[in-house]
Length: 68
Image (cartoon, rainbow, N blue to C red; front, top):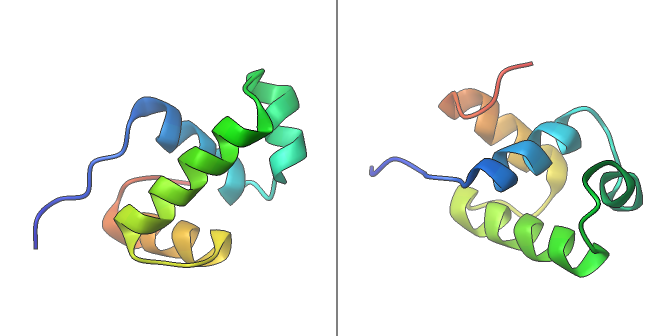
């Protein structure tokens, strides 16, 4: 299995999702548009092979991509 690579921005958004922030809150924190957040989230889900934020967080923790 090849390693999953996320950009710095994707890791940051994933970390915020892990802290239970919603997309609208992430927009305020990062200054990015809602469409950009959604795009990053979609890419994160695809790379991790999941369909929800909760599953993305669990998978990322198991793979050592994020720590909380």
